[in-house]
Image (cartoon, helix red, strand yellow):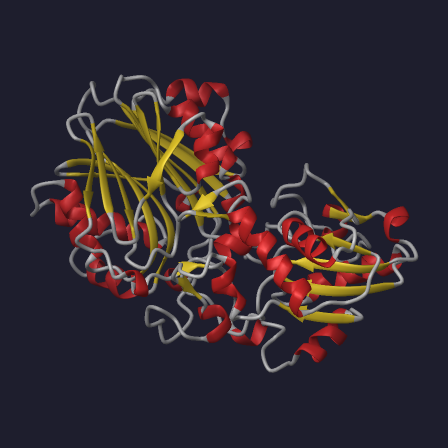
Length: 480
């Protein structure tokens, strides 16, 4: 993590959120993209950007703006007024590969012989270093340290020898390996693509004569668009006034090989989103119910660690019959970039963001639900916070299995030796965090959580990845 970022009480981050829009009637799309990105802000708070083009104007002219920080901090009404165009792409970023700098903000805009490309990418490639090296030795000059630029270069090069940009996207997909959902703007087309395993989500929506591509359905709801369908794993969709939505499924794999990131359902996605036909809210309720069935404990109140632990906590309460309550007040006005308290100060960045409700927890036996334990330092502080507020007992339940392996596909699960569960059993972890008891969601429950027939990736729990991982940790590779 970058040094200017606070020590969040959540230590997991997701790569990005993407949004694209094409108004066939020629209206400006920047403001709708802005609100779409605001609704995807939970997927990345480090940087953001919008790029637009006027399909009736000079071919290949792209206007873009990107900056560090939150969407509502980076963009002013004047910025949006200057972004005139009927087709555009937007992006919010959290870095898992490549440093947190303005140069690495997206969308990327590439000018080349055939015109321009605007690209927004969510995910992480496992073979980016090899591809980048190959491109560099054939003349490519890179402006960023992110793997998204490798994808943009590959598409541009393939476009020189193919008949269409969507065909070039397909050729590039044959070379890249890993996780990616892409939204690409060419001078006259909006293109969406999803990796063959379906690691990252991507949906299609419509509002009147506008078509939208977005990471989650909540972004469609925000701008008043109707959900059409998910982009299938391996599918390339091309949106244009001439043909509407065209689909290329030549890269699709059998459903048995699909490997959606399970953390979309556990933590990353907003609870009001639908991902591949599964309600994120329902999945979290199910996780809480499973915890109550598998790891019951007598207590007076069930609470969640805001925000992603709340719904699973409600599920636990519904299943167990133990009342659901609120134990924490969250400061909603703190982003990821607030000034981190200095070591000599007593303030903890966890306490700046969260505070326990003493009158709610004093003298009570508390079951606390959180979505994960990564390094354990945050859980230790939150357990201590409840005890300091007078809780009689604190029993922690986690709505995911223990992290034992790093992730290479866009989630910043760190190296094994940084994981609290590495070489420790549950009793050891329980003592470290100071809880009276601790239990995790069983691995066998993950499939049930998402309906029983959805292919998911469990690599960070099992070490068995759907794509061969790199031999070393490649995150930050291009800065070495």
